[in-house]
Length: 308
Ligand code: ATP
Image (cartoon, rainbow, N blue to C red):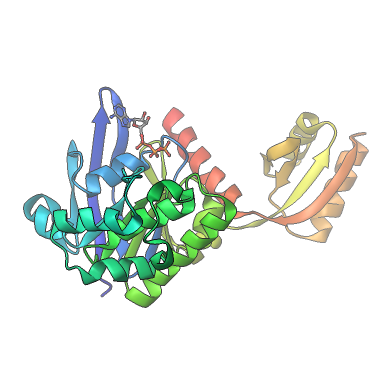
């Protein structure tokens, strides 16, 4: 049976009347890279703060490595490294000195500093003051800090935030390496599916505090149904006309319509129908939904369920 690094059961947190995290059941397999996705305000940081014991849940429980967090908090946290919000770095100290401060605080072995610097590829810049570091280098130093206790699990809240494309690329590489070479389980949050799908092999999607999807990346990709994308100058009339003819129609971005159909014959029939109604068709194409579409679909559906 696959071992689970993070498991939550009915995890719930309110702020006043607001349910920031609503009965979330996470299952993060050991040695996976788990992308925790959701739009801004979805509840990602609140969940992460509960996983790390920074705030208490109102209900539900957290297990790390199969052990209840509430009972074994300190022992479990020793196995976890975290990068949550921007950690405070001492900019007048060098990279190495920053690591030394934390190493003493947590009582880690001295050799772990060189190891952490090596992993994040900062050994050559370790003697430079942090005030001279780029944002990407600061972010890597923060990750080195999180690696000082030689963790089995890394929890990273929006690790790519604020980084330029080169920095994002480096961070992605680093995350992959930490998982493949060191066998560290990685739980990372992001609001960008495009970013997560490049590194993660497991995905959880949170929206308005609710987990609306959890599974492997392949399972999420299996939701990429094909459809016909129709461009017509009168989308409202076209939608009414197609619906009346029995087609299932969805609104896409830019006024385009998505019709649940996948064949050439269907495209021909739809085109004839619309043109017959004197509607101006300028585009028909067979399209595979992007992961972004799936994400929007899942999050919109859950918003509709809430409203119902
Ligand atoms: P972002 O990507 O913007 O950081 P998020 O998914 O991490 O978003 P959270 O920060 O967990 O979302 O916030 C979830 C909800 O809980 C938001 O509506 C937020 O306003 C609210 N919230 C979070 N922390 C607090 C707090 N300390 N007091 C009151 N409300 C809070």
